[in-house]
Length: 87
Image 1 (cartoon, one colour):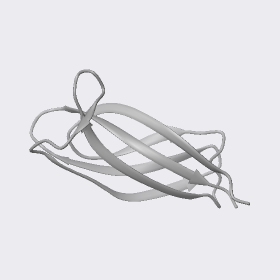
Image 2 (tube, rainbow, N blue to C red; image 1 turned 60 degrees about the horizontal axis):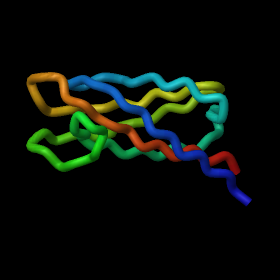
Image 3 (cartoon, rainbow, N blue to C red; image 1 turned 90 degrees about the vertical axis):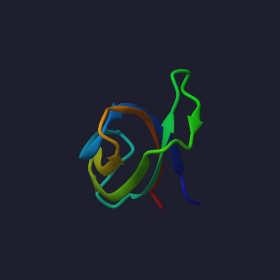
Image 4 (cartoon, helix red, strand yellow; image 1 turned 180 degrees about the vertical axis):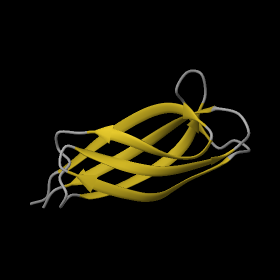
C-alpha cells in the first residue's frame, strides 16, 4: 500500500526559479508530482493571463526542489500542490 502526502505551498514570484521545500516525508527515492496555479488575495485558485509551469522536481532526504516558471513581469501569488509518494 502506498502512502501519499498532499501538501500546499503558497508563494509569490515571477520568472524562472527553483523553489526549495523542506519535508520530513521526502526521501531521495520518493515519487513527487506537482501542479501550480495562480491564486487571488483570498487564496482561491484561478486561471489568469500569466502562464505558470512546473518543469522539474528533485527529491532528497528531507527536502525537494521544484523548478517553476511564471511568465509575467511582476510578482504573482501562486500555489504549488504537491503529492509525495513513498512506496
